[in-house]
Structures are given as C-alpha cells and as structure tokens.
Image 1 (spheres, rainbow, N blue to C red):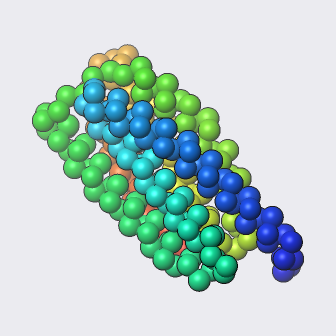
Image 2 (cartoon, rainbow, N blue to C red):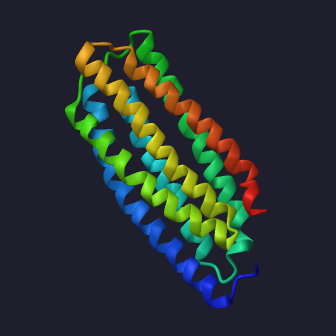
Image 3 (spheres, helix red, strand yellow):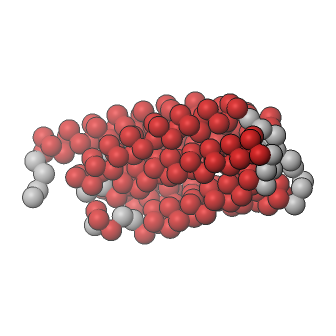
Amino acid sequence: MALTAERRSVLTRRIRFLVAATITYNVIEAVVALAEGSRVSSAALVGFGLDSVVEVSSAAAVAWQFSAVDPETREKAALRFIAFSFFALACYVAVDAALSLVGVREPRPTPIGIVLAGLSLAVMPTLSLAQRRAGRELGSRSAVADSKQTLLCAYLSAVLLVGLVLHALLGWTWADPVAALGIAALAVREGLEAWRGDPCCR
C-alpha cells in the first residue's frame, strides 16, 4: 500500500531523530573506547571505538541523504559510503588484532571497557530496531543499512564483552585480539550487504 505524504513526512522525521540519537551516543562511545583501548593496548576495544566512528559517519551519510528534497536521489551514494566505511574498519582492526596475536602488543584488563560494552549491548538494539522499522516502511535502503550498522554495534558489544571478561577473569590475553577479528569479520559482512542494498526495500 502506498504511503501518504503525511506518513512519509512522519517517517522521515523519525529517521532524522533516530540518526541524531545514534550520532550522539556513538560520539561518546567512540571517545571512551578509543581512549581506554589505547591506554590498555586492547585491539578489540580500539576496534569497537573505530566502529563507533564508522557508525557516526554512516548516520551522518543518512542524515545528509534525508536533508535533500528528494532523499532517493542520494541513496546510492549514501550506501556506497556506508559500505566503504565497513571495509576500512575491517582492514584496520584485522591488522591491529594480528599484531596483538604475534606479541607486538599485550592488552591489559579494563573494567571501563567491560561497562561500556554492557551499556552498548543494552542501548544499540533498541535504536536499531526503531530505525529499521521506519526505514523499511519508508522503503529507504540507506536507512535500513544504517540500522544494520547500529545493530552491528550490539553484536560487537557482545563479542567485546566476552573477550574483555575472559581476559579479566582468566588472563586469556589472546581473547582480546580474537574478539577483534570477530569484529572485523562482522564488519566485512555488513559492508557487503550495504554495498548490495537491502533486498527487502527494493
């Protein structure tokens, strides 16, 4: 069923609000994760922080798209930007994790990182679900792709949380870079999906 102009306007405003909320949260998350990850030499936490930077970039791309009079004219460019952001994140995190595995860096336990991962695991699925519903109803592939970026943050939070907890409780230093490699793999998968666009919205 075709959307009315009023309903399209409501959904567009909702997506703009959710994008703004995502950007705000992820800026804070990125600052904390990157600072703490650098302090304790955690490849997983640095990768998580970089994902937050990528997520801000992705949300900004969607905000740019929806600032146009006709957002569909900017959709392909927004999707390409989101995809390239995922691929860049995956490359950096994979290299950093490999360096940790071969002993160039040795991560230290981080209670701050554990708290941050737990908080993100609670917040991100809610934001993702709301944006995905609005994006699918509106038929916007870029909004759906951005919601997947947000959901990826929840997956990454879970991976990060497991890695940091295993390291803190059992002293398994390898758990941190292995978690980082998991983050890189998820980023590649989501990048490919963003590049192709979400089939449900075609």
